[in-house]
Structures are given as structure tokens and as C-alpha cells.
Amino acid sequence: MDATAKALPNSQEYTVSELSSALKRTVEDAYEHVRVRGEISGFRGAHASGHCYFALKDETAKIEAVIWKGVHGRMRFKPQEGLEVIATGKLTTYPGSSKYQIVIEALEPAGVGALMALMEERKKKLAAEGLFDEARKQLLPWLPEVIGVITSPTGAVIRDILHRLEDRFPRHVLVWPVRVQGEGSAEQVAAAIEGFNALEEGGDIPRPDLLIVARGGGSLEDLWSFNEEIVVRAAAGSMIPLISAVGHETDITLIDFAADKRAPTPTAAAEMAVPVRAELAVEISNLARRNFACWQRGQEHRRSELRSAARALPKAQDLLAIPRQRLDRASAHLPRALRANTHIFDRRLSMVSGRLTLNTLKTQIERARDRVARLADSAQRCSQHAIELRRTRLRHSAQMLAALSYKSVLSRGFALVRDESGLPLHHAAQVGSGEHISIEFADGRIDAVAGSHPDAVPKRTKSPPKQAATAKKVQGDLF
Image (cartoon, rainbow, N blue to C red; front, side):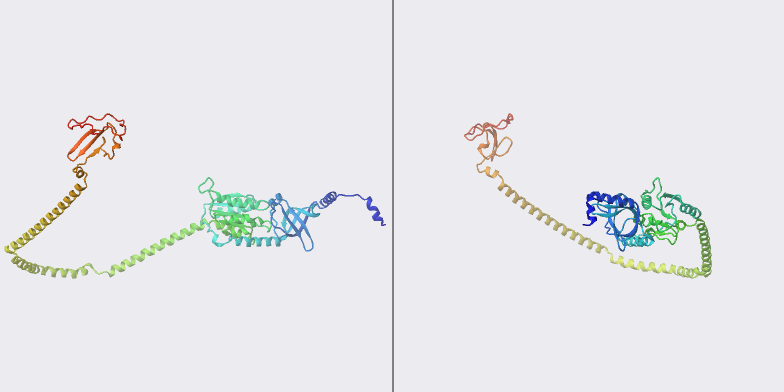
């Protein structure tokens, strides 16, 4: 028998849990903190719990990785599928599946190439959403009253901007201090843009007419905060025109594409924001001089035209000579023309008066009288005919009324019985014993008191009857 096999029964025995714990301690003690470079594989976003699970791989190997929820929320760079990164964390094991894994505490892109690839991919994504469209760009105000500057309060950038504004055209400047690099800087820049936009018109703090987001030069990693989606979306959604002045002229960040205007440097942003006051004063003076010179030339031109027109006009005597001759000729012919006109009208009057004789007037008057008499006779006949028609209709209506009246029935020996209220009674059962009734005949009406009969109803309770009129005779019991 092999000696090694004989020795095995004497070696220490471990349970599976003990062995897993021992391996876990060994791995964690040996690799407490490591930096691993690899490509993210299998990342599908954060789990429902908020933790992230994926793998880091290279050409020949792969290691499982996990980022806890709290660490993931504080990370500046978020994991992304296919991104080459450098992960810092500690190595441990997962006893449930006999695997070792790295618990990542920090994550950064592996070199400028990875950052550029991530930036390019993010640029395509945001451009597809329309955040970089030229149609979204706003025009900068020509001379803003208030300028909001979002930058670090301690750097040289804010001093350069204020100095340049003071030289060109002093304006009211509001500074929103933010971190421009490192953890939380992107959130602060986005919050500053949104904060300026949230200010109300006419409030205690004046709302800026223009915003400048500025930072000095630096590496791609230093400027990365201005490539974050939260900053780009805040710049694109700003209702206040915004100038991006991040880095030097050669530095490009994604906020440059979302801003309304990009400045190569913070100083250039101040130059874009306001014109030069001295140059404006000189330009205004030049325009005033040019305007006065143009006015003078116009006045002189109008004077020359007036003098030329005055020389071309004829004299008043020449203009009035011919009308005067016509007036003299007309005044010479006027007496003879008046006499001739008078003779013409006299002849016409004689002709008309000759036709107007007394017999003619009498004849016309007689004709008018005959016409009036005929019209009056015709009107009288029409009136009589109309009256006769209405009389005939009235007689017909009276005959019909007499035929339909109940009085014609009374004339044939019938009578109409009414109760005290004057309503007609149709049945004997409607009359109570001792009730006052009235009976109408063809020749008059009498009052009576009803007696008892087999179908009579009891006498109704009512107020004492009124005293019968003494002029009418009260008849006794009819029944």
C-alpha cells in the first residue's frame, strides 16, 4: 500500500463550510486590495436590489465582479458593457458556488482610448435624441443685464471672466460656485443650471439673461464631468441662453454640443457675452456724424431742386395774361347776351300764357269735380256692400247661437236646476235634503228648498243660507 494513502487518515478533516471559510480568509488576506484591468462583460444594468453583477475578462481569463448598491451610486464612472476599465477592490470568494470574485470599490476607464470610445458612444446616443440639433439653439442677447457664471469660485477662470467683462462692458454678474472636477461635480453643475432657470422674473435674486459654464484646461479625465448625461441634458433644457467655455480651444466636451454657443476659452466667453462699450460709443458717434452729413446733403439737394423748379416756373403775369383776355371778351359780350336771353324767356312766357285761358281752367276744374264725385259714389257703394255683408254674418251667428242655446230647450217645457253655487245639477242624488236650489224656466228663475226622497243624500253641513231676496217668491216642497 502507498505510504501517502496510509497517511491520509491521520490528516485534519474539514467540513465544506470550514474549507470554504478558510479559502475565503486566505484569498482576502493575500489580495486585500487589487487593481484589475479588463473588459466589462455580461453587464445588463443594476439588479432590482441596486447591486451590479458582471465579469471582467481579457483574452484568456475571466473573473466575476460585483458592485454594491451604495458604491454604485457614488461612482463617477458607471459600468458599461464592453468598456475597458481598471477596477479597484478586494478579492473574495462566494461559497455558494465555489467561485472567487472581486468586490469593486472604484472604477475608471482604462486610458484615454476607452474614455474617447465612451464619449463617442454617448455623443451618438444624445444626438439621436435631438439634444444637439441646431433648431434648439437660442440666440444670445445683445447686451444682457445679468450674467450667471457657473464655475469654481477659487480658480483663475472667474477672475478672467470678471476682468474681461469689466474691460468691455461692466454687467451684473451672479456666480454659482460648483466643483468642476471629481466626484459630485457633474451633479453640482447640472443643479446650478437648473437653479438659475428656476429663478423668477422680478424676484429678490435677479434672473440671468445669459449663462456661462466655464472651466480651465485639463486632461480628458479632468474635464469628464462635462461629458456626463446629467450636465448635457441640463444644458440642452436651459431656457436661458448658455455659453459653454470648458477647457482650451482644442478641448471638446459634450456640453459644447448642447450649449447655445461654444467659446474656445472662458475669456472668449466673456467677449461673446457683451460688446465693447468704448467701441459702441465710437460707433454711435460715427453714425451720428454720418446721419448729420446725410441730412445736410439731403437738405442741399432739396434746395437745389427748389431753385431749379423756381427758375422753370413762368411768371404770374404770363400765367394770368390769357385768362384776363378771356375775361375781358366775356364781359364785353355779357350785356348783349343778357338782352338776348331775356327776349327768349319772354317769348316762352307769352306762348305759355296764351295757352292758359279761363275756359281751360274751368274745364280742368269740372273734370276734377266729376272724378271726385265718381270716386265718392264708388266708395259709398263699397261701404254699403261691406256693411250688408257684416249684417248677414251677424244674423247667421245669432241664429246659430239661438239654436245651440239651452234657452231654446227651456222654451219646450224643460227647467234647469242649479245648486247654491250656481252649478247645474244632473242627478237627483246630487241634491241633499233641505238644500237650497234654484230652478230656471223659460220665463224666469225661482229659488226652492229640496225635500227628502228615497235617493236623497243627507243634508251637507254648510254655513247658514243667505236670506232669500224678498223680491222673489219662495216655492214650497216640490217633492
